[in-house]
Image 1 (cartoon, rainbow, N blue to C red):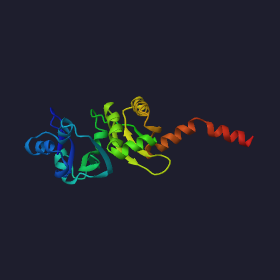
Image 2: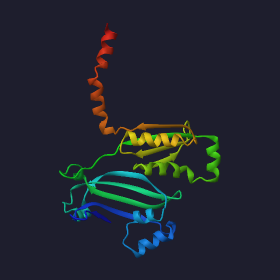
Image 3: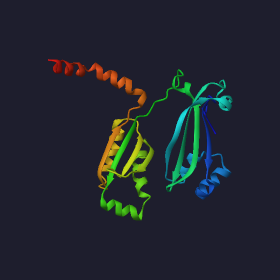
Length: 225
């Protein structure tokens, strides 16, 4: 599949998709076989609740994809593979590829969306509800996230201090704060916390700013004095 500009015809993304037909709702399957509608549109129009889980990502030469983007075969590409789940079962495996230059090409702006880790613990009453309706464990958070233009990247149930761990891609802190307030207000969590994530590549910049505060030198002066 190619994602192209409607006016320019320029290719922005190439994707390979593997689907499990027997796990797709019949209207979605019929739409895939009988129309040219994108699968995302079909899922949305048929109100199929889904969430995506990123499995891996990296960089590689364009290779056979070069012809789609009019670039050389050794041009660096960025790729990611994720699975799409519905009713707690994987229904699709998708690998997307696009030129790394998309992040630097003049006139084409790609905004890196902040990521937030969410940890939460359920009340005993909510656990009792989930025993009867386990699908509610994902749908509540997913609906809240998508309603404000964010994305639930991945979600796990964990053993230990918390019951739930999720990673949310939100446009900004206010959006993520709104999600946190909305979920905490439901009363189904004993605790609900949000932590903004920092990419390893940004750690050097963080350390540099920490040095700029001068706190370290002040502590050293006090210790020496």
